[in-house]
Length: 277
Ligand SMILES: C[S@@+](CC[C@H](N)C(=O)[O-])C[C@H]1O[C@@H](n2cnc3c(N)ncnc32)[C@H](O)[C@@H]1O
Image 1: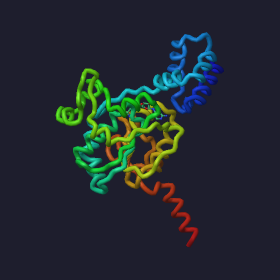
Image 2: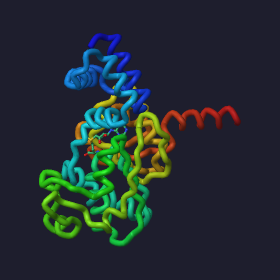
Image 3: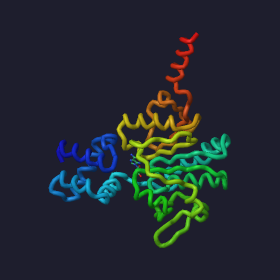
Image 4: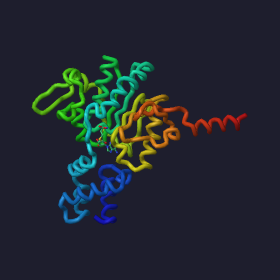
């Protein structure tokens, strides 16, 4: 597709799904969209856009394709061990009722992992786990609590597998009491408002798809959404490039602690008090 067709397609995607394609890494996204539209077998890009505009099912299919829903329970087990042994016990020492957000939660593997860990650390406590994603089909599987494949649960300890899952011919399912611990909502991180007052925000393996400017903006919004000393948990290959400037300190690899006030706010406040003297 040529540049003009690509711009037209992007505008139609934004109009129909609210997804701003320009926020994602340009070359990667263009390659994916090129391949997708070609596979749809329409005589022109405009003809495909026409149908996209009129058909919610086509919009859902496109979002599904762009979403890249790969996930699993206890993905990167070393980091989840750090979460279970160091990060969450520290937060639980401060509050027995944690407010947690799993942003871009895919089919629920990540927030259910958090729910299992919390159940092990503080059984019966009433935490709030909000889990959001842009992709409705992923959220449906998440709300249903399955079915999950053997690959999805390969890192789940045998004791947890028997305690928190059932299995039938379709696959693995999380038990009802665990399902009740997670609230699933549709949310577009590039467009929708962020809640505040989180003890922990987990946003893993999605920020790598965004352009650098969008990433920086998201880190700023996560900073605002966290409580003082709150923790941002990123994926293994994601880093906050200028943590001090963004108001974060490194707690452990992949875990950033909100430092308040931010250094620049600090200076501004200092300057104001100097002026007031
Ligand atoms: C690779 S999965 C990561 C799932 C999980 N966080 C993990 O690390 O296993 C990426 C997820 O990001 C979601 N996503 C992509 N763009 C998004 C956006 N703008 N807002 C919310 N979710 C988005 C996709 O739908 C997909 O489920």
